[in-house]
Image (cartoon, rainbow, N blue to C red; front, side):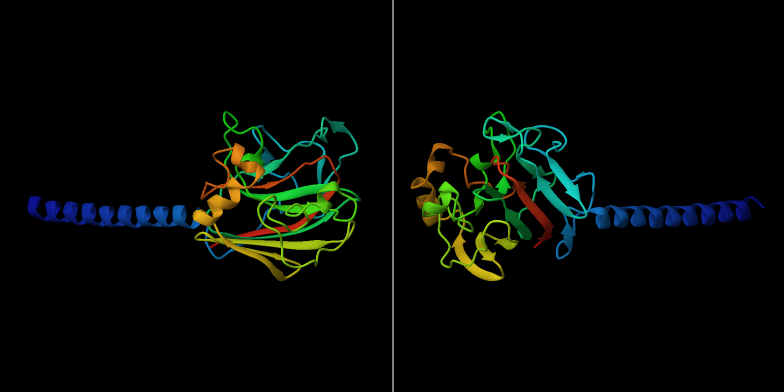
Length: 247
């Protein structure tokens, strides 16, 4: 009887261990599937509470940023210095390394804004996201002062490179910008056309920075992973269909 009881106890113990192993494996699988997946488009404006965003260096998104029916509007009717009261630059909570970002936008008359990427959020060193993150410009080329400057026009990689085509729609009209950053290769499209291509972090990239205003900030354009930012430059601007895919 003792021998039989021992055999039964051993069998139950082995079975319990196997069952425990299966549960552990399933738990690990659930953790892996919860992690950000490559190759899957994510709508960054899907949550009406803007839960995936925050004001750079601060907490929740300010009241001047208004999201309704998938369209995000920065209300710049009231100002604090050169930015909007209750506004400020907003950044994603998540950081991205290799990605494909699509953004539809329109700017107000004489307005100025921008889309930044590889933003490194460290306010002990950098007060604004543009001190680390390269920016593809948003502007009314006709009436904004930046529209008269080379490398500052809509679609340009701000103060670094000009786009090679004039295909940006005027103020009040929707445009679509796509930024593809993959293993150091940067491609920018405006309204479905490739307008700019370059390589990040090589000798030529460093030369571009050295010839720009950003040479004052040693960290600019050096980070290979960072946040996406939408700029408050004190003008009304609208965004929709802000989607990103990890590559």
